Image (cartoon, rainbow, N blue to C red):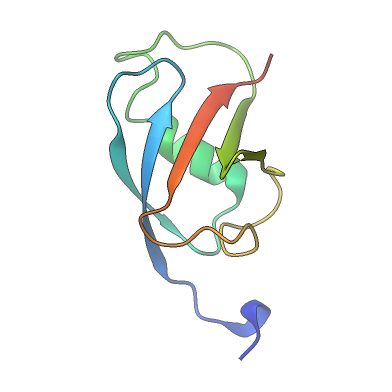
Length: 89
C-alpha cells in the first residue's frame, strides 16, 4: 500500500519547543502537516514556560528544517523520533 493510501496512524514524538528546558511526548497523526505538528508541540509550552511570540514556528528533524506543508509521514518522522520546534527568525 502506498503512503498516500495508508490509514493515518498515531505517532508519539519526543519534542522540545524553543528555549524550553523540558522534552515532552506529543502525539500527532501521520497525516498531520508539519505546521500542525508545530502547533501540537507549542500548545503545551508557549505562554506557559516560553513566552509566546507572534512568529512562524519551524520544525527540525535530524538536523533539517521541514517544509510546513508536508505531512509527518512524508517527512519520514517515525514513532519516538525527536523534533525541535523554534520560532522563525
